[in-house]
Image (cartoon, rainbow, N blue to C red; front, side, top):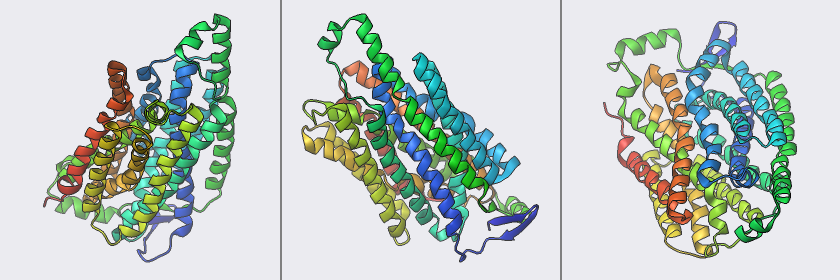
Amino acid sequence: MATISTSGSVKAKIDQNENYTAALAVLASLFFIWALVTNVNDILIPHLKKACNLTDFQSSLVQFFFFGAYFIMSIPSAKILKKVGYKWGIIIGLALMFAGALLFIPAAMTRIYSLFLFGLFVLGSGITLLQVAANPYVALLGNPNSASSRLNFTQAINSLGASVGPYLGGLMILSGIEYTAESWAALSEADKLAYQISEARSVILPYAALAGVLVLIGLMIYFSNLPEIESETEEEVNHHIANDKNTSAWQYSHLKWGVLAIFLYVGAEVAIGSFLIKFAKLPHIGNLNEIDASKFISYYMIFAMVGRFAGAALLTKINPRMWLGFNALAAILLLAYAINSSGNWALYAMILVGLANSTMFPTIFTLAIKEIGHFTKTGSSYLIMAIVGGAIIPPLMGLVSDATSDIQFAFYVPLVCYIFITYYGFVGSKIKQ
């Protein structure tokens, strides 16, 4: 039974039939903003590759440093929440994001790639704190039977931010000025440097604006009546400890495999978005310029948003395990077609993977923490740590692309990830008594 802290140490039981719309609306704004920030990274990868003269592997370090923060900061974030509570934890997370956004200004002025990466790590650290707070909060705030539905709804708002992010990023950051290898070689060194300085500084205005938006959201959270929530009362924790044969969260196989499923899912989703622009620019696929190609990241995320709104309704009636397995299988088939074909249909198949992706994260999350009792907080932290897959899989895909000089072939990397997710849905998510 979840509880809400009403004042000081006084706690009230959550009424599973009560309407917590106001609290969910506040949380939804957080899901929106961190998705927007996260998915601008897909624009930064090709952009900083030009501005800082990087390889595919080097440019994919954008995701490594950003998502690496999830692995490093998840446990400290849980400790912060335990000490200061959800409301102040969220405010601290927003403050970290604010600091990370401001770091982009000196990074752009100096064109130092490592400073960009540090700014991304600080941004990711703030988002980690928000994620550690918001995902289990939404799952616990109401009837447990509709937890997947609530998470899918907030993830749908997340997808709206994910759709807006690449579109705005493409308009505000990408210049549309591109050079072939031959035309680049023909430029003087002074012209090359001037171009790279101009490209680097184009991120200043967007990230300064982001910093301002984060201040406004922080003020909104500060003046809101966001309820404080605990997963169980002290008496219930002691009861579960006394009656639980397991001594570690890792003894729940559906949690253990769920952590791996989250790792692979986030890695696959981020890897696809990271190299979707390069895929769409291929002459035998879309033959698009970078600005037009960037729009397909938004389309990819729009399909995810549509799927999550639909999933919020459908998952109240459909077995989540079967739903997850069939969607992962659909992602495998779509990727296999996109990898082995050409033309617009290959590009359409690639963005349709967003629809298959749509409900995977919240479904895996709720399946993994189901019936793990007093290990729920610990399990949630492990699942948030597993988002580090977004730091590992994209660089791996970049290495495959550099080694084969074939970005289309490199999409086999996320395809393999979906094979395990299919297994988790049909088999690995079963609760073993």
